[in-house]
Image 1 (cartoon, rainbow over the protein chains, first blue to last red):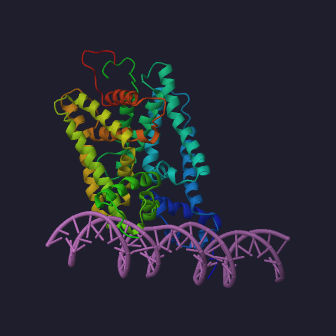
Image 2: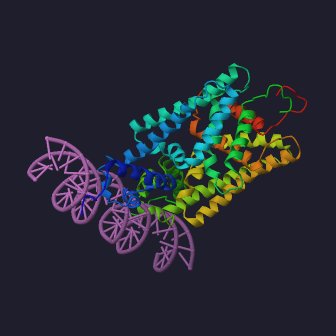
Image 3: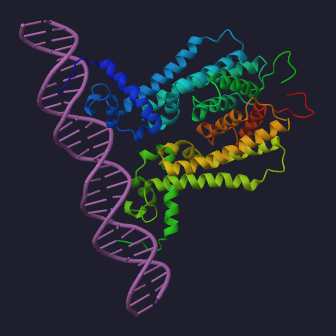
Length: 204
Length: 204
DNA sequence: TAATTAAATGAACGTTCGTTCTTTTAAATA
DNA sequence: TATTTAAAAGAACGAACGTTCATTTAATTA
């Protein structure tokens, strides 16, 4: 047999990405073979090469699409009218929500940078740095306007991001806490960690 | 040729572990072949099997030894006489120090759990949980004695550990900051994040 | 000193890997 | 409708994989 009735190149490419995502997130890029991906899609190995030049390109697309989506939907929220504390709160909620819904993407983009060849590595690294800049900028703005008090904005940003990325290593949908609770807790901890003082509130 | 003059089983086993460590940390377990490890040690592939039953056992030893060392040298510090805030400070400094000196071990134990078969997975997972318990206990103690104020001790512990583990993704020895500075910054941020209030200090 | 054990080599095992190629059939285009 | 292009199958490629094995030599033990 050969071309299947109703087959469509664009849809098949999407299915390949969709099936490759959880496989790579769970086993790691090197441990996932093209045959595993093909099997999950329900297609022959060779067919994948009609849609991706090689295995590496699947990973690049996964990571690149994810970073674009992460940055893009943050930009779309347009937090520019909020003050830095509100911006940081919104960012924490946004990132946790993204972590929970798209945990596999987040994990891969964090973990598999090392699996990329230099060109692709620079591409994704650049997108990641741009995303980190979001947090750095919020913290710097908060410092300058005097509502945050941190020792070093860069270290603070890395610490905040680290703690957030960790969420999807322990979060389980059926766990003790709801997403809203987790968001609330992280918002509170994060704001405290950057030395935010509630105005007109001497309690904390 | 065969057995080499001066060769010693225990020393060769150690060399295998020592060389496998950075390889696996940089490329990931699945991407490192037994031939690569053998090449780094300067030995034939087959010789490895005189010291390890299979590839998986190398990873298990790396992770197990690391977790034992991490826990053991923390226990040896014996922070039990300190108050929770001092304990948490000591823990942050200890963990960052460990991260910087033994970044590869920390990274592997965090990343390659998924590469372990069920039995080994449970073994390492148990050790990791015990280590997480250190932080949970400190935070709970601080809560009970009223010097910390967190929403949820478990979430707080995960957040603290996540931020600390992140250090070795961005720390570079030749970077802008010294280890002591990084420790200081993290101590300050961490203590603030758990709602610690300096006694007799109304400033922060 | 003789016999045994330990630690290495180097070749070989069957399997799986990423990738390519030819062929077949469906869909799109002229 | 005839032709071209797209998308699949399936076989095949050489290379690399983890592992085993016979063999050789050094170190240890009897």
